[in-house]
Image 1 (cartoon, rainbow, N blue to C red):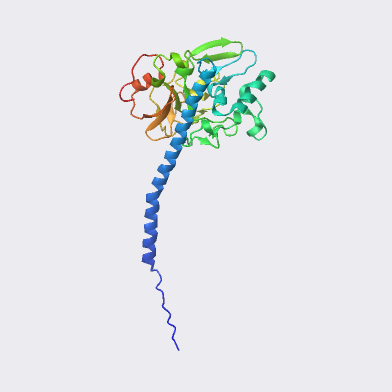
Image 2 (cartoon, helix red, strand yellow):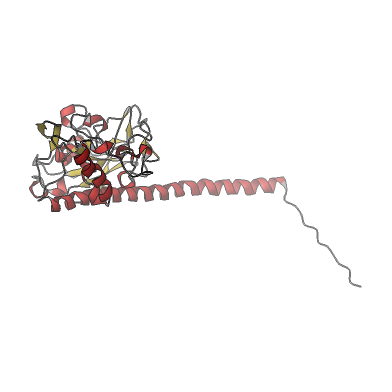
Length: 304
């Protein structure tokens, strides 16, 4: 008769178990930064693509309106239909239906663009200003929560981008409805050339007690505090300084008139020719001023 022999297994000792746990912890510690870098790279790519689409939307708008570019803010006399440039560009980022809700209804109801009703379920209160739009948000922006600035949750939809006021605004025309800020330029007549002028830059959705709201009317409605532009020269401030890279904390160390970014060491900008590039944190104030001024006649220095 065969005798069955049972081999006994030796269990892990406490020391061996601790060694295994330590090895796993080290591996996790090594992997987490890599995973975070991959996520940030993906978010930065998405952010870059958003700015690219905004820049191309300007060119598509121009091809429709005799080479004109959208105004930083426009008010149509008599109907109060104020809207900013991001609202105007909606049809060119595949949001034509939303644009029609804001403009067609405003013409018939004499209400404002941002307070128009939208289909039920589109936004809290079914109101235009509470609509959130992912193409207008940077995934890396820590000041956005569920599509809203931290200080405007369920009230005003956020954006992480802003247009260059020196490009899209500056010329004021008063009318019975308020104030419009209309660009002096068309795509074809930008004195410094489309490849040498910044059209869009990143800007935090929440900036202290202020913010960046995609449907904010602009004009005389505090455009330097809540509007979708930067370099708002008529309202003072340090708008001509270099971008605020990672202001920390953003609730106290942030200037709403200046560009700002969540990305480490670089701020993404869209040039007027439709290209996107990162501006280094080491860029000088002079170079930045040359890049955002459309008609100074200066060549961008080598540190651009």
